[in-house]
Length: 256
Image 1 (tube, rainbow, N blue to C red):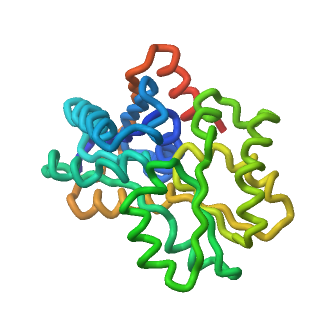
Image 2: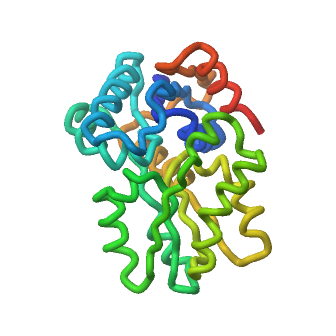
C-alpha cells in the first residue's frame, strides 16, 4: 500500500476533467492538481517552451511526494511526454492518447472529427494514431479556437461561447463526421454546449478521460501503488498564477 498522492498537471483548468474521473473512481487516492494558469493556453507555444513548463511542473509534483503523475494536457503530452519519461524515468508518468481508435470503431459514416489545439493537431502522436487506426476512416481536424479561453473564463454556458462552438462544429457535421473526438482536456467542459449544437443529429462526442483513469488503475496495480482502502484522501490545488486562480481551480473541481 502507498498513500502518497497522485499528481495531475495541466496548463490550466482543462485537466480537471481528468481529475474528476480519478476522484470518482479512486476515492481512497489523494490528488495534487497543478494547473499552470500563468502560461495558459499552451496551444500556440513552441515545443521547447512547453517542455520547459512541463518539466518544471512535473518536477514540483515529484518534490511534493507524488507517486505517479498524470499529464492531463493533450498539448503537453504531445510536446513533452517522451522528454518527461526520460527525465523522470523512476516514476510512472501517464499521458493522454487522442481517442482516434474508439472514434473510428464507432463511426458509421466513415468520417470522424478531431477537435484540438493547433499544437496537438500537428503532433506526431496524433499522426501515428490516425495512421494506425484510421485506415478506412477519414479524419477531419479542426482547431477549437477560443475554446480553452472560454473554459478558463468560466464562460462555458454563454451565448458567445455557443456561437463560437457552433461555427467550428457545424462544418464538421456538414462534412459527414458522426463522431467528434475532444482532443483537449479543456473541451469536455463544453460538452453541454456541444450537445446543444449537435441537437437531435446522430453524432457521438467522446474524450479520453475514462481511458486515462483505467490506465492509472492498471499502473497502480502493476507497481503496487494503490492507497489503503481506509486512507482518508486529501486534495490539494496548486498554480503558477495567483491565489484567486487557485481558488477557482478548487471550486471548479467540485462543481457538479
